[in-house]
Image (cartoon, rainbow over all chains, first blue to last red; front, side, top):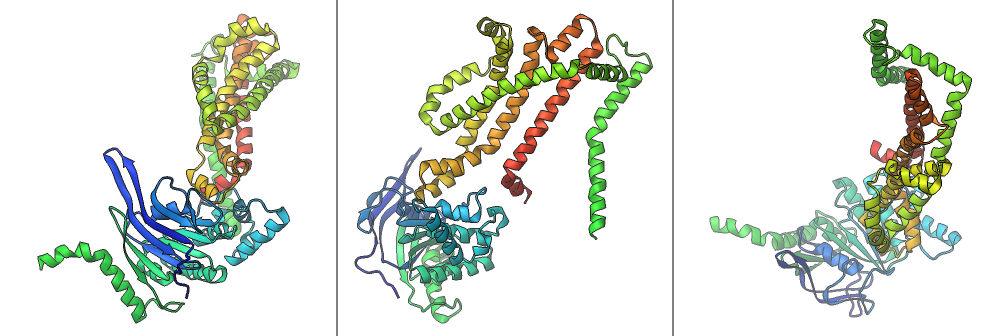
Length: 261
Length: 265
């Protein structure tokens, strides 16, 4: 079990992010403190609009302008870098490039012979070596997302950011992909940060589950998941953790009913 | 199972083809009928049969192929220059905000001036020879090409820009693999519209100053009151324009097959 070490490679301290809108400023994130250790798998759950995707995009270097600290390997995040890979909710494959060209798109600065090998290795990793010459529209949703994962991993990033990567897949494919990402995590030992609104998914995958609340986006609670993998979604401990997280979300919403009784 | 399927599609194809030509057929039949019944005077509008005979005569005498060849050659010259400059400048402007700011005003002001309005100046600058006609055609084709190319490049999906930033893809690789192929549908539209406008401009230019070409053929026939020759010229322009468009569409289908497959799903 990899748990956060003191020399964790992602450190976020009192991070704030606000957007200017017509009526003033909106606080998207407020006072975020989070340390993620090397090789750790951290899930972030929250309702839509809680800023969880913004947090991920700040880590990716896609959002400019934040206050507080966000450091990776001791260096302040000021833009994207090859030490971080990202998978988005939509696969974002380039429709006119083949699967292997899409993966090679992320690979820059290697001589061509070497890059062919790296692309093949990564397609094998996601189980799509036979689809190297296919075009994205010929793939299913799950397969497209596998290619996106291969593309994100092709530079061997230390940190893989997953922004609701299985959100648009059907329930069965989603479970398959969760097992798949777990297998890849165990093989590659890349640090992974997953943003999701699926509590089961967060518990099934994460070493810790970060629960966020909205307006302004803050961390409400961090729930450690000390269960051996592969995890059984219907086991007692799993259900207990799920209950704990559910309470965090619905505590506010259910209070009015309590008054009514 | 399979042969039955083929017959249905073949029947369907035949049906579609009949639908495709039906309206033109009816128009020609009514036109011929009204002429036979004496409702239309041949001097005002000769019947289709007369136009067909004149077409055959002009074809066999070699006049029509010669004039047509001349017009097509002019279009190819003007369109070729317009495509080269329009694509080059369009890509440059699409990629550079600064270049866009610098060039926007002049493009927007010159664009609405119809190429025909340029004819007096074109004659002063280039004389009444080939150059002035090629210049008019160039002007007609240039703006649709440059504007569509710029737009196509601007439409690059922001999501791909983010992917490229995350992966630290070099700018020239991004332009080559994402921006240009993504702009291709718009570029093809620009080329198609440009070719069409070029074809319309060649006739306009020849109507005024020429001693050959389809436009000249029409103008010459007008002076001799040969309305059948005028009609042959007009129909030829229409048919050739349609053929050019089909040709570019076919090229377009081949170049952007990924998109057609995409839309088909």
